[in-house]
Amino acid sequence: MSHITVRVYGVLIDPIKGLLVSDEFIRGDYFTKLPGGGLEFGEGTRDCLVREFQEETGLDVTVGDHIYTTDFYQPSAFRAGDQILSIYYYVQPISLEPLQTRPTAFEFKPDEIADKNGQAEHTRWIPLNALSEDAMSLPIDKIVITSLLRTL
Image 1 (cartoon, one colour):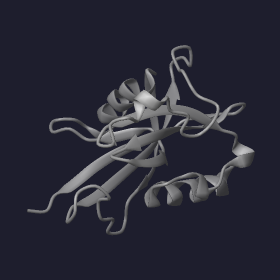
Image 2: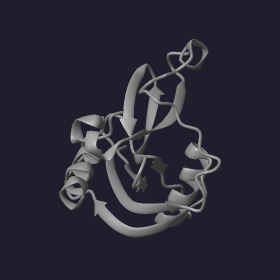
Image 3: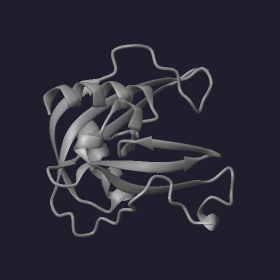
Image 4: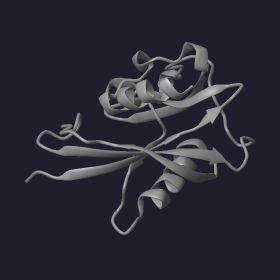
């Protein structure tokens, strides 16, 4: 039985540091994506994003304007036959104080990626002058970044 999975992502831009991204190791593969994740039953999309940001980054955020919702068929990369619907919003941190980032992509310690079926994630900043759609792994993130670059 096929499912539609709703995912909600946040675009956090700091004028000095750049765009906050999440570098992730998922089931043996490496991805750079925007912070966010799956909508749980009973959640609104904005509540989901607040929860996901807290879980992934330790940040409390306020959710701002809607940026984009997937308007084409996107199959799931992880569950054959499933469809992904992604929703993107701007977010603002209440404080950046608890955020811990790493300077380079996929800077994982060996024990963090020892389990090839496991998952690990770290955040980092991509300076806005170095940002391109190629910095992102997921096809919908690439569309959002391309659109974002037109407005910067």
